[in-house]
Amino acid sequence: MRKRIKVLHLGYEYIDRYFSLQHECAKAYDLSDDFEVTEVYLFGEAPAGHSNLQSGKLVCYNFPKSQIRLIPFKPLKKLLKLCREREFDVLVCHRYKPAYVAGWLSKFYKFKKIITVFHGLGEFRRLSRGIFFKYFLPDAIKAGVSEAVRKDILENVPGAGDNDTITLYNAMDLEALRRNYRSRDAARAELGLPTDKFVFGSIGRLVAKKGYQNLIDAVSNIERDDFCVAIIGDGNYRGELERQIKRKNLEGRVMLCGWSDEAATYVKAFDTFILPSLSEGFGLVFIEAMAAGVPCIGTDSGGVREVLAGAGVVIPRDDVDAIEKALIDDLAKSDQEREEARQCHLQRVEMFSIDKLRAMYCKVAYLD
Image (cartoon, rainbow, N blue to C red; front, top):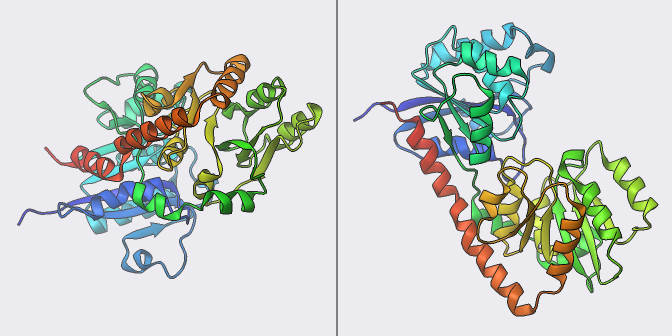
């Protein structure tokens, strides 16, 4: 019997919700007979009764964030002890902070393979980050969740090349996602949305780079009252967006619905999903919408074109006029055109099924 490959799967923060992308990535190894995985998070806490906590397959350190700076002595001490006890072969980590810790850890523990996964654009715009990678993780595999993110890594990490920089597309458990959807009527009732209007919906953090200020400007230019916009999300830009809505007299036409950990379950409330981002590494929310058969509009702002290819509408980024035209064109579609778009999205989303993600993560972790 072949010896199982032991994987340390290092994430940023444990979040207790019905779908966690980092947990699904770790689960790829847990479901394989070839791997044995320990899921570790730098921050956050799992519920005390979590079965994987009790078995040791899940470890949540919940370090003070001040400790993940300069040389992270205390986190290194605990992680090094865990590595020596469990004799890990492979380290898989997500985002820059865990990769930073992994770089230091690799100086004291010899992994046979290190895979670092990045989910957004611009994670290496700071020169110091690229230099750190060059000297602390020179042999690590660098993966972007879209071709756009992969190219961003290649452009900003000294020494990164096609031989060690790959694409690992995001994915979701589509069947689990569909089981959790609220019905159209229930979702609209809970969100306080009208039942007799066309609803453009969005899910995202209320921050400037999500581009919601442009969406609001576009809505203000359209003189018709048969549609509204609903945004599920929260963030430090909420106050500015609320003032913009009030200034443009859009109360009741643009609604900020607040955040929900189950935001994806509300997508059937929307007739069309729109995300006007200025920068988007992938856009996991598009999968959540497409799996429900909700047509999508996105901006050409990174990995969005790759996700929506051949299905959704992709418009120029940071362009109010383009958003306005996309909204008007969408409102003008016939029932037949909308059904065709729905079927196209349902077909496209199968490219991002969880089985494909699991196969990709296992393939890249095998030892040569």
